[in-house]
Image (tube, rainbow, N blue to C red):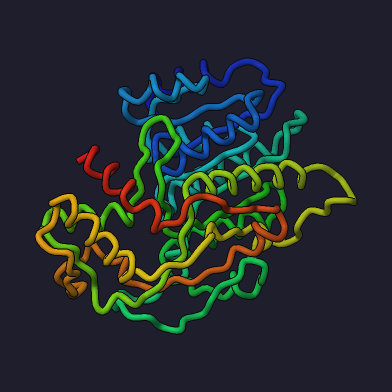
Length: 351
C-alpha cells in the first residue's frame, strides 16, 4: 500500500463512529450492489464504506451516502486495514479469492483484539452452490441434496470443490471465537438487480450471449441436469435477515443463544429448482421470436466445444432450510421462467 493510499485510508477512517461501521467489497457488482441497497433501506443509520476500483463508479456509490475507498480487491493491505476499521464486512467479490478472504479475516482479528470497547466483528461472505455441483455432463444425476440445517451435510462437502478452500478458511476463523463468520451460498441468480452499477445476472445471461453469437441456443448434453435458483431481490432479503441474526447473536441474550459452530452460520441461497434443458428451450422460443436466433431448436454440444457453458452443464441440489425455518425467509419473487424475456432484454441492452 503506497503512501497516497494509506493517507486516503487514514483520512477516511479517522474520527469516532457511534453507529456500526460496514465495509462492502463488491458494491458495484450484481449481488453486492443489490444487497447494499437492501441493507441501506433496513439500516440507513449505519456508516458504510465501499472499496471501488473504477473512479467512474464513484458517483453511483456516493449517491447512496456510501463512502468510497479507492482501490481494488488485489490491494490486500488496504483491504486488511479497512476491515480492521469496520464492525461488519460484506464480501461479494470472487468466491475463489482466498488471499482476499484472508485479508478480511486478518483485519477483523486485529479489530477483535482491541481493548477499546469495539463491537464484536462480523464477516458475511459470499460463496455459491457451485460448491455442491458435480461434473459438466448435462445429464441429471441423483447427487446428494445438501440441507444447510444439517451441520454434517455442510461439513461433508469435499475440500476440492469450487469455493471450498475459501469457505474452509472462513469456518476456521469463525471457530476461533473472536469474530463471527457467516457464509451465504447463492444458487442461480436471476432478475434485474437493484444496485447502483451492475444489474444483470451471469448464468442465464451467459446462455443468451452464446445463443446470439452462434444464432442458436446451445446446451451441453441432453440438458436434463438440475440446479436451484433465486430471484436477486429475494437473495438480498436473505442477506438482510442474516445481518439481523448476526447482530442479535452478538448480544448476550439467553432467549437467542449464539450458534456454537460456524457450520450453523452457513446459508444456501436457494428458492426453487429448474432443469437447464427446459430453460434453454424457453429461451430458444423467445429468442427466435425476437429474430435473434435462426431456429427455436436447442443444439446439444460438448463441454469441450463450449467450456463457457460449464456452470449450466452441472447438477447442484441444495435446500435452504436454515434461512426459511430459522430466519423466516420467504422468497416471493417471479419465477426464473417468468423473467426470461426480462433477462433477454437486459442482456441485449448491455451488449
